[in-house]
Structures are given as structure tokens and as C-alpha cells.
Length: 311
Image 1: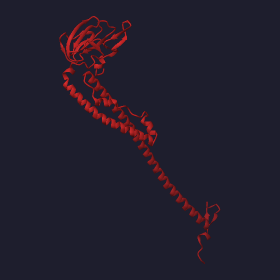
Image 2: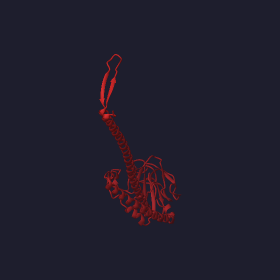
Image 3: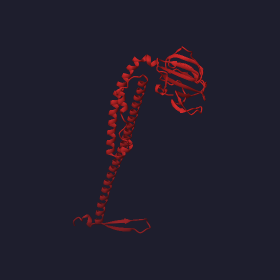
Image 4: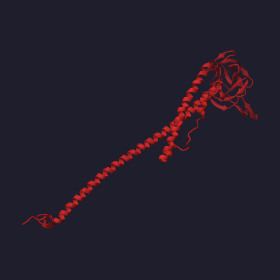
């Protein structure tokens, strides 16, 4: 008798729960075993494919997360560089303004190179870089174009500023003696309480013209000469009380009023930074302060024009 195929065979399965229980008998067709095995293979195959796809998806997601993080870091770096460019541009403008003030004090012509720097405007875009970045490729293109423009302006500005400062150094070397006799610093530390120009009189007499600046401070605070020169007056003035007047050159002189004590004598030669007296409340004064005044050709001028340093 020939061999039967698997689907034609029948298999018997005996289940013996326990010695006292009845034996259960099940007959399974070979056809079902065949289809069951095939189904199991299909399930295993699908499970394997699903597992591989899941691994690929997880790997892709991990790469996406890493790329998003890298992109975010790069955008933050671009914003930081943009802001640094703004800071450099602002610093260059401050240097150019400071140079202009030095040239004004020294009565020398302004540099065309420095004027070029002062003529450079701020960024053309008024939109924050972080906002442009959120606009996608168009925003990034606009931001990179603006950054390229600013880098070009800064490079050009650095060269101009270097040329301008080199010229200023030559002027300073040539006028070093004159510079020593030109007021350029604050005469004391304190609080600026009254500026140069018209103001409401502190004595209730309407409006009056204030020919200097008032700097309030503690009694006894040292007062220093703002430039080298010769003491013209070291004594009492009817309005300013104990006063020191210094002649610095043929046209410039400084006055220090309302002192508590005078520390120099008439005819004495002083240098910039020498202590000439101490802050007080003498003369017509409403409180301890220094009245500081600069005269050019005997006419008062705004002292702020001649002050380079800060409190």
C-alpha cells in the first residue's frame, strides 16, 4: 500500500488528565496540521518583518531627533553670532563717537574715516533673528544676507577706524604739550545735580543762567585739577566762597567753587590729577557740592564738552 500524503492522514491526540480521570481522545486531520504549520510560518514571517520595520523606524526617529537637536543648536549659534555682530557694531560707533569728542577737545579736524563709521546705520531688518529663523528657508536667507552685509560693514569699518585712530595718534603726539593743558576729566566724584545752561534758580529767583555744572558729594571729598596749569586764584569769591581758578593756556581756564578747604596757592603750577582742594559748602550754596566751570576766552562753555571719563 502506497504512502498517504499528510493531508490524507489523521492524527490522534490522547490527553490523560490524571490516573482516575477518563482519557480524552482527539483526532486531528493532517490537512489542519498542514494549514496550521503554514499559518505559523506566515505569522513568524510577519512578526520578523514588523520587528525589522520597527527597528528601522526607531532608528529613523532617533536620527530625526538628533538632526532636530543639531538644527536647534545651529540656529541658536546663528542668533548668538548675529547679536555679537550687533555688539561689535555698537562698540565701533562708541569708539568713533569718543574719537570725535577727543578731536573736538583738541580742536582738530574730524576724520573722514571716522565719519564713515558714524554713517553706518544699524541693521536693515527690524525683525528679530529668532523670528526670521521660524519663517523657514526665506527667513534664513534674509538673515544670512543681513549678517553678510554687517560683516562687510564691520570689516570696512575696522580698516577706516584704524586709519582714523592712527591719524589721531599723530595729532596727539604733535600736540602733547597742548593736550596736557586741556581739561579732559571730572574734577571729583559725586552726583551731577545741575547742568550747564538756563535753569530754575535754587534760591527762588526765577530762571537764571548756570555757567557750569554742580556735583554734589560728601564734605571733604578731594577736588583735582582737570588739566595742568597755573593757579590764578586760591581764596575767597563773594559768590562761590572758597574758590580755585587755574589758567591752563592762553584761552582756557577752570573754576572750582564752594570748597571747604583750598590746598594750593596762587602762582603754583599744578598737573592734571593734583588735589587742589576739598568739596564744601562755602559761599552762596544750598548744600555740599562743587561748582565746576570752564572758560574759553573768558566766556563760560559747557564743561561736558571737555569731559572724557565717567564717574
